[in-house]
Length: 118
Image (cartoon, rainbow, N blue to C red; front, side, top):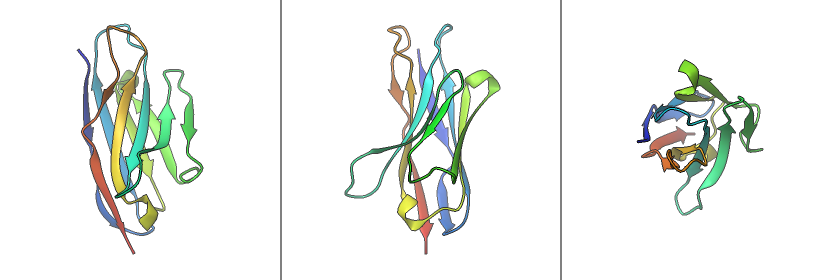
């Protein structure tokens, strides 16, 4: 059974930093990607960053150079380090476990609020 637990989030002034974490519990033989999404009020959920089991990372243009996604603990914990935060980064952030295997199905985290003030 796959379980996803998120931690971190909070409120910071513009220019500040926050780190979000996504811890995964899963069956064996579940190579997976972790993808971070965010959803601002009255907006659609959007892609932020992802990291594969390789590991290979990708970033949205809006966060490239400011956010870094890192896998730790043999890939069971993924961190999203967010620097030089902007008010436009204010959103609920979600991590998503993505494997493509039927025995470890995709699963969303519960979401965490990140608020960046002027």
